[in-house]
Length: 206
Image (cartoon, rainbow, N blue to C red; front, side, top):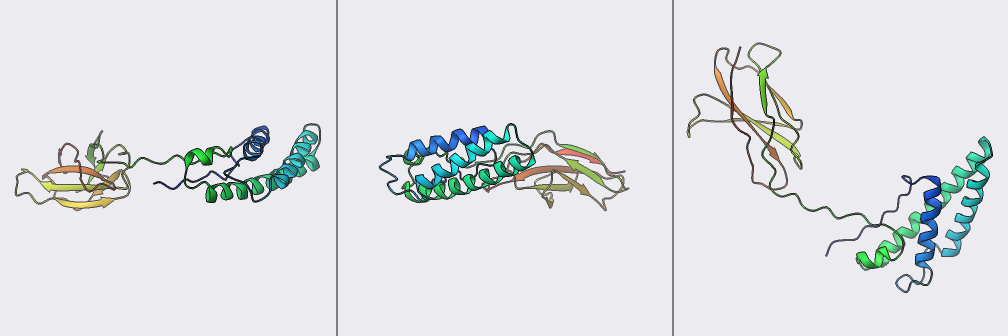
């Protein structure tokens, strides 16, 4: 069973949307048998919301002081809603249905990423210095790092590939032999140990 995590941050909401969301939560928890003793109490949250609504209304035609009061009232309401969300999370029995009945939203569970896709748009170019090659590839979804591998041609079953690890999508091979052709490939590294390599590219070093 996956652990249900309630979203307790409201900073992404606009002022009016926070007012609406807080009322939805209050209404949803009122008489909700799965959450009989909310902490903080619904009375506290309602009082904070009422103060916020009043400050929000005053701010429509007010100046800097009214804006400051509105921001402080919003901060107080967000704090209480956050604490209330933690109460819901602790008492929802890891049930998405029960958690959602509170009016709060929950974090979407992430599906595990399986075998990474074959790297695409793999390119090899001459590097900025003599004896270097620059390798680049498009981002591989789910890759935490990349393995760039190089060997001299011709490529055979006995070829020894030198592996270089990179946390970025590019790698600069240096100290290569000028006039020699190299074979290069790349693979993304993720949670799944199976590796899918790109097509092998060939390039002469200048």
